[in-house]
Length: 268
Image 1: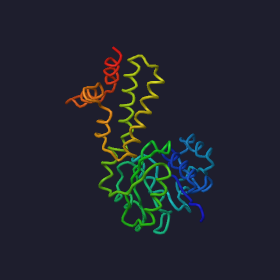
Image 2: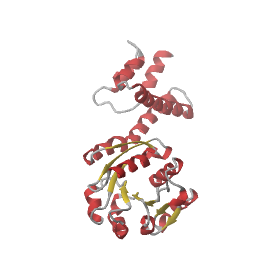
Image 3: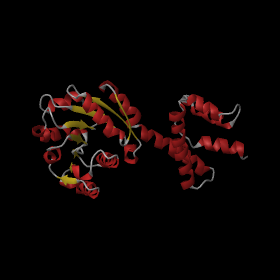
């Protein structure tokens, strides 16, 4: 089967993450990917070029003759980008996929020719390390085959599910912004370790692997996080004292003091 031709409009981090995933998964070859970006973002195009992808300053050239065109630009410029692409889009090709935050399927379809096949995607930044958590919603004219293709593309950089568009705002708040929440918790845990005398690099390594391992436990065991928490917390122990403190009304999500509490108890 001939490898897909994929056009990226925008060449930033998400476009690069997706391109790397597609190439690594064998979905397409670097030479069948074209990325466009303004001249001011030449450094981004250079990074795409180093992967072996073709690059251009012309958005139409990225979409022309592509099977899938992925719009990876900021929401404020989506309408201008879609105006550029309009003459290249037909009901048969390409499938137009957008990762632009908050730009609805109705808006995307309204800016393109009638019967254009459109899919809206919400990935997250761990796609950069092939650990993304993505969802997508298909437009009125997107087919079952389009949904299967979108799932295959996004699964190359992590996990993927199809959802109704009404779920996308909630997904944005959960998995879209979720990495930022996790980084706050991770930093706080590491700060607690440093406060108790651990070297920063070791504290951060332990915090990161603890978070990664805990996530793996949820996914592989099928147990509720509350049950897994209880498995760690012995009656009357410092783990349960620390987790109880985290649940106090008005408590900020600071992990610095749970390691301190446990450390003081175990090593007085």
